[in-house]
Each structure stands twice: as structure tokens, then as C-alpha cells.
Image (tube, rainbow, N blue to C red; front, side, top):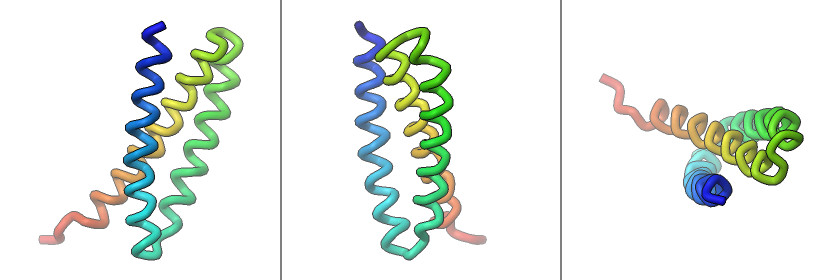
Length: 88
């Protein structure tokens, strides 16, 4: 099923970029961003698992993970840009 393939590739890309950004925030001793993103992902994955798994089964779980970790990635990218943007 193409749906699970799309979710898998999105999840792999998201997790790869999350690892890089999490290492950056750890390196500058700003662990609060890693913690905040992890809590966001946990909440979204849990919520969407309850909603999607009964309807879609394992594909629903894949979608829930993709949504949660993509949100985590967006969270880290937002703060990375905010931290690294030059001030005028």
C-alpha cells in the first residue's frame, strides 16, 4: 500500500533531521527545545493513535507517528531559525 510507504519515508526524513537539530541544541546547552519537542510529539502521537488506529489499523499508527514527528521537526526548525537568524 503506497500510504504506508509515504509515511515510512516521511518518518525517516523527519527523524534524521530531528537527530541533527537535537544534537545542535544539546551542543549549545538548550535542552529545553529537545524536551518541548519530545513532549509535543508524544502528545500528538498518542492523540492520533487513539483516533486513527481503530479506523486504519497499522496504517493509522504510521500516520500518527508521521504527524507527531513532523510536528517535532517543525518545532525544532522554528527555534533553530529563531536562534540562528542574524539580528539587524
